[in-house]
Amino acid sequence: MKIMFKKPDPSPTSPQKRTPRIRCTELSAGYPGHPVLQQLNAQIPKLATTALVGPNGSGKSTLLGVLAGVIPPTSGAVHHDGERPPAFVPQRGAVGDNLPLTVRQTVEMGRWGERGPWRRLTRQDHSAVDSALDRLSIRDLASRQLGELSGGQRQRALIAQGLAQESDLLLLDEPTTGLDPEARKRIGELLTTLVADGVTVVQATHDLAVARTADACLLLKDGRLAGQGHPDRVLTTSTMARIWQPL
Image (cartoon, rainbow, N blue to C red; front, side):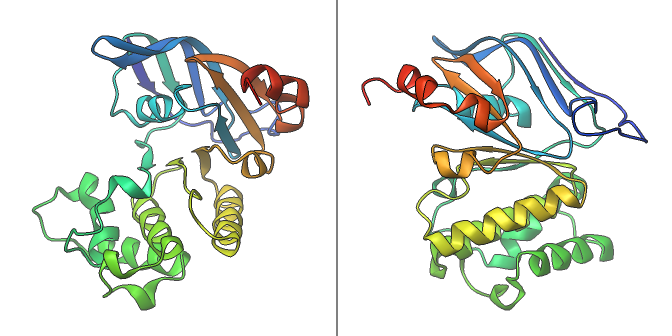
């Protein structure tokens, strides 16, 4: 099993010809006594949004965990065309409402990979945190407790934590689940802007409307790749009928 990082191409070509940001080769992964991903061969393009789509239990969150480096492959390899570790934003439910954390403290946790959890933040760290707060338009919420926030505000705080890591690869697990239409729209616009600024975005989603706005799609079923490519070609009526049964 391998997870490899490679120095990025200094002069990328068009999106169609660009070296993929991630390649999975014969990738298998799961948990003790419970295999999930099975011999997955897939590519995730650079400087694009990629949606991971599939029924519950299809392996979306497991694949994100492997790409983030928190779940080790049991076999196969993950090739990263980049030097910095990915920034991983889990589902909102993974962070307890009762934790006594302010928004700023939550975003500052994104710098722990650079500084460690017990060391004082440097001027550069504080600058990265301020930039992330501004990017998500939540600096005015910096002193608020996480548990006091609306769903959309809370999700923006978690994405800001990911941005504070200053990675060129942002991994998100169901970032718009449970949000109102306006909050979903704002997050979608933000992700589009991040790609334009040089970030590759991968998000697991069960929302087909969100998936259809992505640049690329990986469709999973039972831990295997059922399709990959542009959402218009992957998320067809016939494919949906085959993957989600009964409808």
